[in-house]
Image (tube, rainbow, N blue to C red; front, side, top):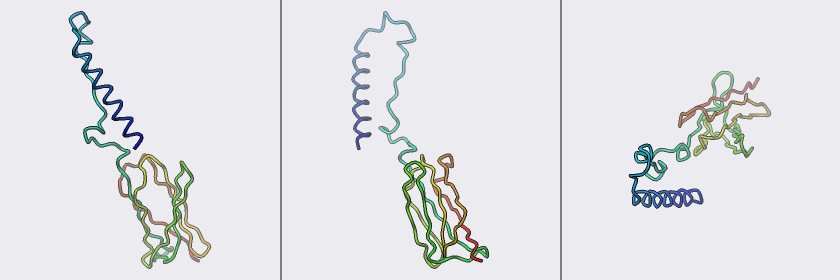
Length: 140
């Protein structure tokens, strides 16, 4: 909300400056100034901003035979804040983490009966809005 107010204030200041400049005579200015173009932030006109989008991480926790591991726990770590979210999978082994910020890297892994999958990374440079990752745990 604070960022939105700052954008509005800056935009209003820019509009006021443009109004004052247009009221002045440009006859004495070099041609480069008379053809200047000013642009407002895209967010004010409904333009897409990477901040406005979120991504969805889904997947399954599977054993080495591709069978689901019910009641496994999936851990998702925000690498910027080190905050951790958990998800206990159901009978189908599926997990879901919605509303992830695309500008943050995340690490995800699963645990089942004191065994752990490898850690996978959801990179900020991956521009998919939906990411699917299978986490395999060797149960033998």
